[in-house]
Picture 1 (tube, rainbow, N blue to C red):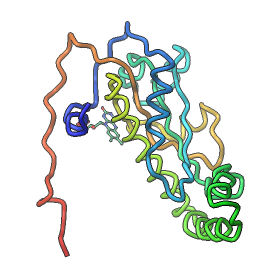
Picture 2 (cartoon, rainbow, N blue to C red; picture 1 turned 60 degrees about the vertical axis):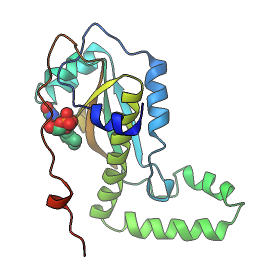
Picture 3 (cartoon, rainbow, N blue to C red; picture 1 turned 90 degrees about the vertical axis):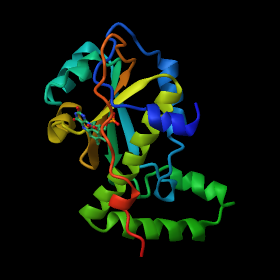
Picture 4 (cartoon, protein in one colour; picture 1 turned 135 degrees about the horizontal axis):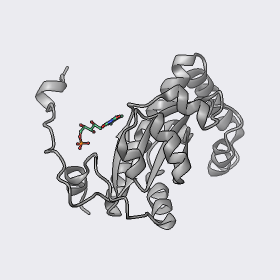
Length: 205
Ligand SMILES: Cc1cc2nc3c(=O)[nH]c(=O)nc-3n(C[C@H](O)[C@H](O)[C@H](O)COP(=O)(O)O)c2cc1C
């Protein structure tokens, strides 16, 4: 699909067709395309829990202000930001070392910079994890559209509740959830609401 069309046609879908499952291969292809999203130092500070079983959906539904789409969608993604992904344990550093021909000094410099920029306060770690994972979220929604899959992002959720119920780590932060599936064509989506345009949101200095 042409990029302009993708942007014009992506909508937050309120009604999913409960009878339509999404095959795992399609989900994998969407995610594997979306991970081309940019991230700071290419550190990719994110991970995803795919909520697919009825039991897990029910738990998520209760922690999402009982938004019906959570139960109706084929799957829901919990997008998790990793606040500590700047640290030494991130395998991306090893890949970076290879890709710069073993130049350890260069990689150590990047590690030091990342430790300061993203690890020197809780605010910096959180911004790092959540801003990068936000870009992944948009990439997933656009990639899904390319595969004919509809989505709905949600942050009207109980972040701490999801964190606890799904056994997340201390350094994880729940960024949002995204319901995914196929829209129920028998229902009409509300018209798209207008956006604030360049002249209203941008300042040229
Ligand atoms: C981060 C984020 C959180 C959102 N949370 C919710 C939510 O909890 N429930 C909901 O019904 N819509 C939610 N929305 C959907 C927005 O209301 C929707 O994107 C907006 O109205 C624009 O509509 P469109 O996506 O169809 O263009 C959320 C959207 C974003 C980006």
